[in-house]
Image 1 (cartoon, rainbow, N blue to C red):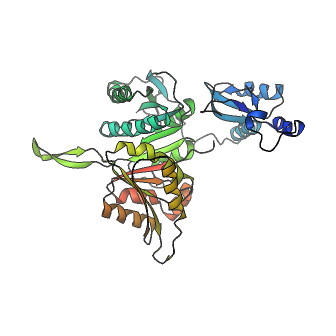
Image 2: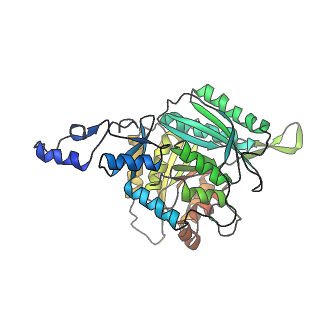
Length: 399
Protein backbone atom coordinates (compact mmCIF):
# COMPACT_ATOMS: atom_id res chain seq x y z
CA UNK A 1 0.00 0.00 0.00
CA UNK A 2 1.31 3.45 -0.92
CA UNK A 3 -0.61 6.40 0.58
CA UNK A 4 -3.68 4.20 0.96
CA UNK A 5 -3.57 3.00 -2.66
CA UNK A 6 -3.07 -0.70 -3.45
CA UNK A 7 0.18 -1.25 -5.37
CA UNK A 8 0.67 -5.00 -4.96
CA UNK A 9 0.22 -8.15 -2.90
CA UNK A 10 2.62 -10.71 -1.43
CA UNK A 11 1.43 -14.34 -1.62
CA UNK A 12 2.94 -17.71 -0.71
CA UNK A 13 3.98 -18.05 -4.37
CA UNK A 14 5.79 -14.71 -4.17
CA UNK A 15 7.61 -15.80 -1.01
CA UNK A 16 8.85 -18.88 -2.85
CA UNK A 17 10.61 -16.53 -5.30
CA UNK A 18 13.06 -15.57 -2.55
CA UNK A 19 14.60 -19.03 -2.58
CA UNK A 20 14.27 -19.57 -6.35
CA UNK A 21 15.95 -16.26 -7.20
CA UNK A 22 18.40 -16.54 -4.29
CA UNK A 23 17.37 -13.17 -2.92
CA UNK A 24 18.84 -11.96 0.36
CA UNK A 25 16.81 -11.47 3.50
CA UNK A 26 17.14 -7.72 2.94
CA UNK A 27 15.17 -7.86 -0.33
CA UNK A 28 12.35 -5.30 -0.39
CA UNK A 29 8.67 -6.17 -0.75
CA UNK A 30 8.72 -4.32 -4.06
CA UNK A 31 11.12 -6.94 -5.51
CA UNK A 32 8.89 -9.95 -4.90
CA UNK A 33 5.28 -8.67 -4.78
CA UNK A 34 2.70 -9.31 -7.48
CA UNK A 35 1.84 -5.95 -9.03
CA UNK A 36 -1.67 -5.21 -10.32
CA UNK A 37 -3.25 -8.14 -8.41
CA UNK A 38 -6.77 -9.39 -9.07
CA UNK A 39 -9.18 -7.31 -6.96
CA UNK A 40 -12.87 -6.90 -6.21
CA UNK A 41 -14.99 -3.94 -5.12
CA UNK A 42 -17.23 -3.90 -2.06
CA UNK A 43 -20.34 -3.89 -4.28
CA UNK A 44 -19.51 -7.19 -6.03
CA UNK A 45 -21.44 -10.31 -5.01
CA UNK A 46 -20.11 -13.33 -3.12
CA UNK A 47 -20.66 -15.43 -6.24
CA UNK A 48 -18.25 -13.10 -8.10
CA UNK A 49 -15.70 -13.55 -5.33
CA UNK A 50 -16.06 -17.34 -5.26
CA UNK A 51 -15.69 -17.51 -9.05
CA UNK A 52 -12.43 -15.50 -8.96
CA UNK A 53 -11.03 -17.52 -6.03
CA UNK A 54 -11.72 -20.81 -7.85
CA UNK A 55 -10.73 -19.55 -11.31
CA UNK A 56 -7.30 -18.33 -10.19
CA UNK A 57 -6.80 -20.89 -7.38
CA UNK A 58 -6.21 -18.25 -4.71
CA UNK A 59 -7.44 -17.97 -1.13
CA UNK A 60 -8.00 -14.23 -0.74
CA UNK A 61 -8.75 -11.07 -2.73
CA UNK A 62 -8.03 -7.40 -1.97
CA UNK A 63 -11.19 -5.26 -1.77
CA UNK A 64 -10.71 -1.76 -3.19
CA UNK A 65 -12.57 1.50 -3.64
CA UNK A 66 -11.00 3.80 -6.27
CA UNK A 67 -7.67 1.90 -5.88
CA UNK A 68 -7.79 2.47 -2.11
CA UNK A 69 -7.45 -0.77 -0.16
CA UNK A 70 -10.44 -1.11 2.20
CA UNK A 71 -10.12 -4.78 3.15
CA UNK A 72 -9.30 -8.34 2.16
CA UNK A 73 -11.93 -11.06 1.68
CA UNK A 74 -10.96 -14.69 2.21
CA UNK A 75 -12.63 -18.07 1.86
CA UNK A 76 -12.86 -18.10 5.67
CA UNK A 77 -14.91 -14.87 5.58
CA UNK A 78 -17.43 -16.47 3.21
CA UNK A 79 -17.70 -19.64 5.30
CA UNK A 80 -18.18 -17.56 8.48
CA UNK A 81 -20.96 -15.49 6.86
CA UNK A 82 -22.75 -18.66 5.71
CA UNK A 83 -22.46 -20.18 9.20
CA UNK A 84 -23.93 -17.06 10.80
CA UNK A 85 -26.79 -17.10 8.35
CA UNK A 86 -27.54 -20.80 8.97
CA UNK A 87 -27.40 -20.31 12.74
CA UNK A 88 -29.73 -17.31 12.49
CA UNK A 89 -27.18 -15.13 14.29
CA UNK A 90 -28.01 -12.23 12.03
CA UNK A 91 -31.63 -12.11 13.21
CA UNK A 92 -32.75 -9.79 15.99
CA UNK A 93 -35.52 -9.99 18.57
CA UNK A 94 -38.71 -8.18 17.68
CA UNK A 95 -39.44 -6.47 14.36
CA UNK A 96 -36.21 -5.88 12.50
CA UNK A 97 -35.68 -2.26 11.41
CA UNK A 98 -35.65 -1.63 7.69
CA UNK A 99 -32.54 -0.17 6.02
CA UNK A 100 -32.26 3.61 6.13
CA UNK A 101 -33.29 5.62 3.07
CA UNK A 102 -31.46 8.62 1.57
CA UNK A 103 -33.76 11.56 0.77
CA UNK A 104 -31.11 14.23 0.11
CA UNK A 105 -27.40 14.25 -0.68
CA UNK A 106 -24.57 16.33 -2.13
CA UNK A 107 -21.21 15.06 -3.31
CA UNK A 108 -17.75 16.64 -3.65
CA UNK A 109 -14.74 15.27 -5.56
CA UNK A 110 -13.33 12.02 -4.11
CA UNK A 111 -9.80 13.30 -3.55
CA UNK A 112 -9.17 12.49 0.13
CA UNK A 113 -6.96 9.76 1.58
CA UNK A 114 -9.86 8.60 3.74
CA UNK A 115 -13.30 9.59 5.00
CA UNK A 116 -14.48 11.02 8.31
CA UNK A 117 -18.17 10.74 9.27
CA UNK A 118 -19.95 13.35 11.40
CA UNK A 119 -23.60 12.70 12.32
CA UNK A 120 -25.24 16.02 13.28
CA UNK A 121 -28.27 16.23 15.56
CA UNK A 122 -28.00 19.20 17.95
CA UNK A 123 -27.84 22.68 16.32
CA UNK A 124 -26.22 24.10 19.49
CA UNK A 125 -23.19 21.78 19.32
CA UNK A 126 -22.99 21.24 15.54
CA UNK A 127 -20.58 24.12 14.82
CA UNK A 128 -18.01 23.04 17.44
CA UNK A 129 -18.30 19.36 16.48
CA UNK A 130 -17.70 20.30 12.83
CA UNK A 131 -14.64 22.40 13.72
CA UNK A 132 -13.18 19.46 15.62
CA UNK A 133 -13.90 17.08 12.73
CA UNK A 134 -12.42 19.54 10.23
CA UNK A 135 -9.20 19.80 12.27
CA UNK A 136 -8.75 16.02 12.08
CA UNK A 137 -9.75 15.87 8.40
CA UNK A 138 -7.28 18.60 7.46
CA UNK A 139 -4.45 16.89 9.35
CA UNK A 140 -5.12 13.50 7.73
CA UNK A 141 -6.23 14.78 4.32
CA UNK A 142 -9.65 13.16 4.76
CA UNK A 143 -12.97 13.97 3.13
CA UNK A 144 -15.85 14.75 5.52
CA UNK A 145 -19.12 12.83 5.28
CA UNK A 146 -21.79 14.81 7.14
CA UNK A 147 -25.16 13.16 7.82
CA UNK A 148 -28.42 14.16 9.47
CA UNK A 149 -30.71 11.27 10.36
CA UNK A 150 -34.48 11.64 10.70
CA UNK A 151 -36.08 8.87 12.78
CA UNK A 152 -39.54 7.51 11.97
CA UNK A 153 -41.78 4.92 13.62
CA UNK A 154 -41.08 1.22 13.09
CA UNK A 155 -44.61 1.03 11.68
CA UNK A 156 -43.59 3.27 8.77
CA UNK A 157 -41.17 2.34 6.00
CA UNK A 158 -38.25 4.83 5.76
CA UNK A 159 -38.44 4.59 1.96
CA UNK A 160 -42.15 5.42 1.91
CA UNK A 161 -42.44 8.05 4.66
CA UNK A 162 -42.72 11.73 3.73
CA UNK A 163 -40.47 13.92 5.92
CA UNK A 164 -39.67 17.63 6.18
CA UNK A 165 -35.96 18.20 5.52
CA UNK A 166 -35.89 22.00 6.01
CA UNK A 167 -34.22 21.95 9.47
CA UNK A 168 -31.87 19.16 8.43
CA UNK A 169 -30.65 21.04 5.35
CA UNK A 170 -30.16 24.16 7.47
CA UNK A 171 -27.90 22.13 9.78
CA UNK A 172 -25.92 20.73 6.85
CA UNK A 173 -25.36 24.23 5.45
CA UNK A 174 -23.15 24.94 8.49
CA UNK A 175 -20.92 22.10 7.35
CA UNK A 176 -20.90 23.33 3.75
CA UNK A 177 -19.86 26.83 4.86
CA UNK A 178 -16.98 25.48 6.97
CA UNK A 179 -15.76 23.11 4.24
CA UNK A 180 -15.62 25.96 1.71
CA UNK A 181 -13.66 28.10 4.16
CA UNK A 182 -11.13 25.32 4.91
CA UNK A 183 -11.18 23.79 1.41
CA UNK A 184 -12.01 20.30 2.69
CA UNK A 185 -14.06 17.97 0.43
CA UNK A 186 -17.53 17.53 1.95
CA UNK A 187 -20.35 15.10 1.21
CA UNK A 188 -23.73 15.72 2.89
CA UNK A 189 -26.67 13.42 3.33
CA UNK A 190 -30.10 13.23 4.97
CA UNK A 191 -31.38 9.74 5.77
CA UNK A 192 -34.69 8.48 7.11
CA UNK A 193 -34.27 5.55 9.50
CA UNK A 194 -35.87 3.41 12.19
CA UNK A 195 -32.71 3.11 14.27
CA UNK A 196 -29.96 5.73 14.65
CA UNK A 197 -27.10 3.34 15.40
CA UNK A 198 -28.02 0.99 12.56
CA UNK A 199 -28.16 3.89 10.09
CA UNK A 200 -24.69 5.08 11.16
CA UNK A 201 -23.25 1.55 10.83
CA UNK A 202 -24.81 1.31 7.34
CA UNK A 203 -23.08 4.55 6.30
CA UNK A 204 -19.75 3.41 7.78
CA UNK A 205 -19.91 0.22 5.71
CA UNK A 206 -21.34 1.73 2.50
CA UNK A 207 -19.05 4.76 2.39
CA UNK A 208 -15.93 3.01 3.76
CA UNK A 209 -15.58 5.42 6.68
CA UNK A 210 -12.18 5.57 8.41
CA UNK A 211 -13.13 7.66 11.44
CA UNK A 212 -16.39 8.62 13.17
CA UNK A 213 -16.69 11.88 15.16
CA UNK A 214 -19.87 12.00 17.21
CA UNK A 215 -21.38 13.92 20.11
CA UNK A 216 -21.73 12.10 23.43
CA UNK A 217 -23.69 13.05 26.55
CA UNK A 218 -20.93 11.75 28.80
CA UNK A 219 -23.28 9.54 30.82
CA UNK A 220 -26.34 7.34 30.45
CA UNK A 221 -29.41 6.52 32.52
CA UNK A 222 -30.33 3.53 30.35
CA UNK A 223 -30.26 0.34 32.48
CA UNK A 224 -27.73 -2.22 31.29
CA UNK A 225 -25.91 0.27 29.06
CA UNK A 226 -22.35 1.56 29.52
CA UNK A 227 -22.22 4.67 27.29
CA UNK A 228 -25.83 4.72 26.08
CA UNK A 229 -27.85 2.64 23.64
CA UNK A 230 -26.50 4.20 20.41
CA UNK A 231 -22.86 4.51 21.53
CA UNK A 232 -22.74 0.95 22.92
CA UNK A 233 -23.99 -0.39 19.58
CA UNK A 234 -21.40 1.62 17.65
CA UNK A 235 -18.57 0.45 19.92
CA UNK A 236 -19.60 -3.15 19.21
CA UNK A 237 -20.36 -2.89 15.49
CA UNK A 238 -18.38 0.01 13.98
CA UNK A 239 -14.95 -1.12 12.78
CA UNK A 240 -13.62 2.39 12.08
CA UNK A 241 -11.84 4.64 14.58
CA UNK A 242 -14.29 6.33 16.99
CA UNK A 243 -13.96 9.80 18.51
CA UNK A 244 -16.77 10.55 20.98
CA UNK A 245 -17.04 14.15 22.17
CA UNK A 246 -18.78 15.50 25.27
CA UNK A 247 -18.65 19.26 24.76
CA UNK A 248 -18.58 21.64 27.71
CA UNK A 249 -20.30 24.99 27.36
CA UNK A 250 -19.91 27.69 29.99
CA UNK A 251 -22.65 30.21 30.76
CA UNK A 252 -22.58 33.99 30.64
CA UNK A 253 -25.23 36.56 31.53
CA UNK A 254 -27.12 37.98 28.55
CA UNK A 255 -26.52 41.76 28.65
CA UNK A 256 -29.94 42.40 27.09
CA UNK A 257 -31.73 40.16 29.60
CA UNK A 258 -30.05 39.67 33.02
CA UNK A 259 -32.41 36.77 33.80
CA UNK A 260 -31.09 34.73 30.85
CA UNK A 261 -27.72 33.12 30.25
CA UNK A 262 -25.99 32.47 26.95
CA UNK A 263 -23.64 29.55 26.22
CA UNK A 264 -19.90 30.23 25.93
CA UNK A 265 -18.12 28.09 23.29
CA UNK A 266 -15.67 25.59 24.79
CA UNK A 267 -12.00 26.46 25.08
CA UNK A 268 -9.31 24.17 23.62
CA UNK A 269 -6.09 25.46 25.20
CA UNK A 270 -5.35 23.39 28.32
CA UNK A 271 -5.27 19.66 27.42
CA UNK A 272 -4.99 16.67 29.76
CA UNK A 273 -4.23 13.22 28.34
CA UNK A 274 -4.37 10.51 31.05
CA UNK A 275 -2.22 7.52 30.05
CA UNK A 276 -2.56 3.85 30.92
CA UNK A 277 -0.90 2.22 27.93
CA UNK A 278 -2.76 0.15 25.33
CA UNK A 279 -3.63 0.77 21.67
CA UNK A 280 -6.43 3.28 22.33
CA UNK A 281 -4.11 5.54 24.34
CA UNK A 282 -1.81 5.52 21.29
CA UNK A 283 -4.78 6.44 19.07
CA UNK A 284 -5.46 9.40 21.37
CA UNK A 285 -1.83 10.55 21.10
CA UNK A 286 -1.98 10.35 17.29
CA UNK A 287 -4.94 12.76 17.29
CA UNK A 288 -3.27 15.43 19.43
CA UNK A 289 -1.40 17.32 16.63
CA UNK A 290 -4.74 17.88 14.89
CA UNK A 291 -6.78 18.64 18.02
CA UNK A 292 -4.45 21.28 19.48
CA UNK A 293 -4.92 23.43 16.36
CA UNK A 294 -8.35 24.28 17.82
CA UNK A 295 -6.69 26.33 20.56
CA UNK A 296 -4.92 29.69 20.45
CA UNK A 297 -2.17 28.91 23.01
CA UNK A 298 -2.48 25.16 23.58
CA UNK A 299 -0.42 23.16 26.05
CA UNK A 300 -0.56 19.43 26.80
CA UNK A 301 -0.11 17.53 30.05
CA UNK A 302 0.31 13.75 29.99
CA UNK A 303 -0.52 12.08 33.30
CA UNK A 304 -0.66 8.59 34.74
CA UNK A 305 -2.34 7.62 38.00
CA UNK A 306 -0.40 5.50 40.49
CA UNK A 307 -1.47 4.09 43.84
CA UNK A 308 -0.33 6.18 46.86
CA UNK A 309 1.59 3.13 48.12
CA UNK A 310 3.69 2.99 44.92
CA UNK A 311 6.92 4.72 45.95
CA UNK A 312 8.78 3.96 42.72
CA UNK A 313 6.29 4.36 39.84
CA UNK A 314 7.21 3.12 36.36
CA UNK A 315 6.86 6.21 34.15
CA UNK A 316 7.99 4.50 30.92
CA UNK A 317 4.49 4.85 29.40
CA UNK A 318 4.55 8.62 30.02
CA UNK A 319 8.06 8.94 28.58
CA UNK A 320 7.12 6.94 25.49
CA UNK A 321 4.00 9.07 24.91
CA UNK A 322 6.07 12.27 25.25
CA UNK A 323 8.56 11.02 22.66
CA UNK A 324 5.72 10.16 20.28
CA UNK A 325 4.39 13.72 20.47
CA UNK A 326 7.88 15.14 19.91
CA UNK A 327 8.34 12.90 16.85
CA UNK A 328 5.08 14.26 15.46
CA UNK A 329 6.63 17.73 15.64
CA UNK A 330 3.87 19.12 17.80
CA UNK A 331 4.61 22.78 18.51
CA UNK A 332 2.69 23.00 21.80
CA UNK A 333 4.47 22.61 25.17
CA UNK A 334 4.21 19.03 26.50
CA UNK A 335 4.81 17.95 30.10
CA UNK A 336 4.47 14.49 31.69
CA UNK A 337 3.33 14.29 35.32
CA UNK A 338 2.70 11.13 37.40
CA UNK A 339 -0.05 11.56 40.01
CA UNK A 340 -1.15 9.50 43.01
CA UNK A 341 -4.73 8.57 43.85
CA UNK A 342 -6.78 5.66 45.14
CA UNK A 343 -8.53 5.31 41.76
CA UNK A 344 -7.93 6.46 38.20
CA UNK A 345 -11.26 8.29 37.94
CA UNK A 346 -10.78 10.07 41.29
CA UNK A 347 -7.22 11.11 40.42
CA UNK A 348 -8.15 12.51 37.00
CA UNK A 349 -11.27 14.32 38.24
CA UNK A 350 -9.38 16.02 41.09
CA UNK A 351 -6.54 17.02 38.74
CA UNK A 352 -8.96 18.51 36.18
CA UNK A 353 -10.77 20.54 38.83
CA UNK A 354 -7.56 21.72 40.52
CA UNK A 355 -5.70 22.79 37.37
CA UNK A 356 -8.79 23.76 35.34
CA UNK A 357 -8.14 21.74 32.22
CA UNK A 358 -10.28 22.67 29.21
CA UNK A 359 -10.21 19.21 27.59
CA UNK A 360 -9.59 15.65 28.76
CA UNK A 361 -8.65 13.12 26.03
CA UNK A 362 -9.16 9.49 27.02
CA UNK A 363 -8.30 6.24 25.28
CA UNK A 364 -11.25 3.85 25.62
CA UNK A 365 -10.69 0.76 27.75
CA UNK A 366 -9.73 -2.37 25.81
CA UNK A 367 -12.02 -4.40 28.07
CA UNK A 368 -15.39 -5.51 26.72
CA UNK A 369 -18.59 -3.72 27.69
CA UNK A 370 -19.52 -6.58 30.06
CA UNK A 371 -16.24 -6.24 31.97
CA UNK A 372 -16.73 -2.46 32.19
CA UNK A 373 -20.21 -3.01 33.62
CA UNK A 374 -18.71 -5.29 36.30
CA UNK A 375 -15.57 -3.29 37.15
CA UNK A 376 -16.87 0.23 36.55
CA UNK A 377 -16.70 2.56 33.56
CA UNK A 378 -13.77 4.95 34.06
CA UNK A 379 -14.44 7.24 31.02
CA UNK A 380 -18.09 7.68 32.00
CA UNK A 381 -17.12 8.40 35.60
CA UNK A 382 -14.61 11.05 34.48
CA UNK A 383 -17.00 12.63 31.96
CA UNK A 384 -19.73 12.84 34.61
CA UNK A 385 -17.36 14.20 37.24
CA UNK A 386 -15.88 17.15 35.32
CA UNK A 387 -17.34 20.17 33.55
CA UNK A 388 -14.59 20.17 30.92
CA UNK A 389 -14.89 18.84 27.38
CA UNK A 390 -14.13 15.09 27.32
CA UNK A 391 -12.98 13.28 24.16
CA UNK A 392 -13.05 9.47 24.15
CA UNK A 393 -10.97 7.71 21.48
CA UNK A 394 -11.23 4.09 20.35
CA UNK A 395 -8.94 2.86 17.60
CA UNK A 396 -10.10 1.01 14.49
CA UNK A 397 -11.10 -2.62 15.01
CA UNK A 398 -10.51 -5.70 12.87
CA UNK A 399 -13.64 -6.47 10.88
